[in-house]
View 1 (cartoon, one colour):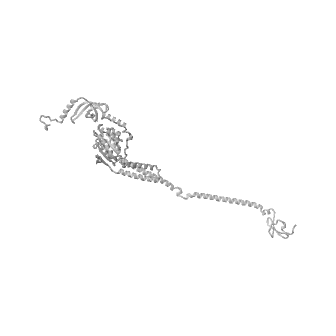
View 2 (tube, chains in turn brown, purple):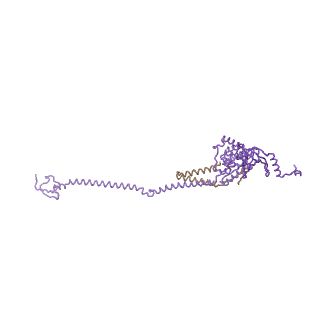
View 3 (tube, rainbow over the protein chains, first blue to last red):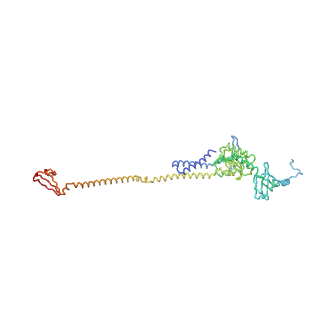
Length: 75
Length: 406
């Protein structure tokens, strides 16, 4: 799995944790504001990731040690 | 071989040839029993059934017309081993060699089906299907390997779904044959190569579109099953239609009923993710707003407390205490003073009784010697011709001693 992939899921889970923690309402105000800031940052990153259009569809045309060729295909 | 037919040689038309061949074939096999496996079974709306009968080495087209097909006492399925009775013929218009089946009966479980069951049992016993070996499929995979035929329906269906949904993915197609004798080997190599050269793939979709049990057979091969089992990258098996189950489906980390379904499983819709994210953002804002509201209320409550609104009140009770104590002090003093006055009065009354004036009241008198003012208590104090003053109750009498008594 790619770093980014793990990151996406971890970030989403982290955001969920932050929200749940804040909703419990037992964190002191200052800590709450810290968490809020962190949450907003995560949400922004996640939505940027969602908006990014990195679609790429490739076909493997050659595979040999040290020699991998692909070709873009799209329907 | 002559390049041009001689005049004696007959030039056949296709129709003539097919008719002739049909007569030959029909004459040779007018009434036979044939054993084999059903494949590609199709029942048309007309009621006629078209299928193939095959063994491991060969196959023949078969047709069972509606009048005979309606008498079937079982539901023919691909892979079923059957015994048929009929005649061999040629469908002239297509030049198609075929057996016209009049009667068909089941002949136990098909060989392929039997092999499928045996392999399934064996691999199951070895633990290849164990749930604890299944790798989780990432929720938001971005690098997706697809092992299938480049010309087949599967890749088309997968790309259709991906184009319709969340577009933020990278798809790598590894083209392989998905049927025929080479297929299993190519699939195994594809799984190995993707793991070796593309270890950062999030998931591999392995599959093909629908087909006969023979078409799907590579996905029932033991080597394919073991390659799936050994893949470090999670594998989703998506072979044929919903009703088709292959060994690949059992050993894969996830079975998708169709290639489209596999794509839908891994490629979350962008809307769904955005919705989830939006919800989290709202909850985040609300949680903090609530927190702030609570603090604001607390602050308001404190800010409006009597002490802060009117600080003087804080001293009021002390003032009251002081007032109260002062009052008690005054009272105590007053009482004391009054008590003392009463005492004085009481003593004064006692003194009155002793006062000489009170004695005079009773008729006594006080005599003083005028020249010295001394009170006369002894007649010897008063000499002859001394003047004395005799004080009585009312007024006094001046007198002179006339004689001196002895």
